[in-house]
Image 1 (cartoon, helix red, strand yellow):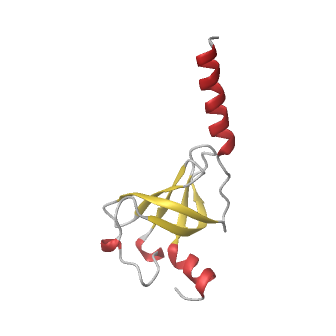
Image 2 (cartoon, rainbow, N blue to C red; image 1 turned 135 degrees about the vertical axis):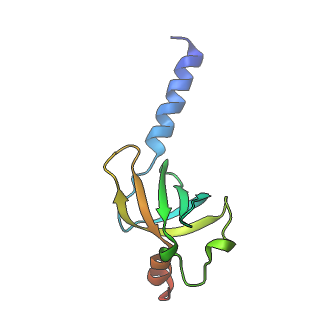
Image 3 (cartoon, helix red, strand yellow; image 1 turned 120 degrees about the horizontal axis):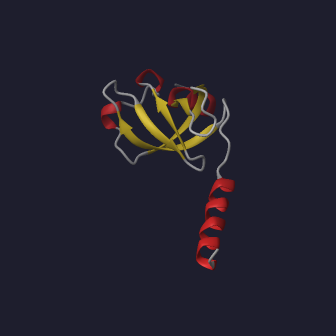
Length: 106
């Protein structure tokens, strides 16, 4: 194996080892990747390499999906796991619950 290929493998291993596990109840930072036809936010959970969904009903009362743009960063609470694929699983997230826990409001 060449030194370059070995460095690439080490970089890949470092990236995989730096991915943190996501658990229900965790507060996470996420970036909005898309907004689907049902007005749900599709987000990438930072540092975890997995995606999640924020249904419109789980947005805080001071947030409107019309005002949220792709690339926005949000603080969210992980409310449940969707599916059973351990490596590529996705999560249900809530901004409303984050505000409730953090600030005592929704």
